[in-house]
Length: 210
Image 1 (cartoon, rainbow, N blue to C red):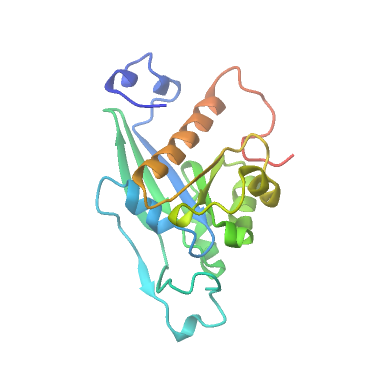
Image 2: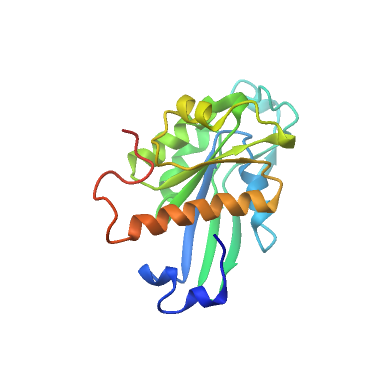
């Protein structure tokens, strides 16, 4: 799926809601690549609230398997993408540590959807994000960060491990690549558009487990 200026007209695919701005959350556990994704796709220098990990984090932040990580997001990451002339997407990367989850209740206000990032080495780190969006009926997709092209789990294995509804898209790729982040966001746009169609099922919102 791609975008062009012709898509912005009254009969274009955005006619279902015609928003001038869309808010999307980028969530997931500690060290899964949220800051990396926002930085890769944002058209402006992203706003970051990173701090260096210190001795105070010992026993609080689980850095197992991500020992190379030396900073952490303590508030949010913020980026922007302009799509055509009628739509601007604002990206809000959430803090991953459990001690900062209280901020999610504020960040989710006004968000149309979310991207949940996962690391196959630590899939359990994304359970909290998935449960959060499911409990609020927020549509989401899952992006699996394949560091350096490594894919040690299949899509089916990830879906089973995360207990995802079959309707939730899963995309895999290296989040340092702009095209990967773009494809993940486009998958979420497809979910949001399908959710707005009059013929859409009146059942549970995309992202809800059966």
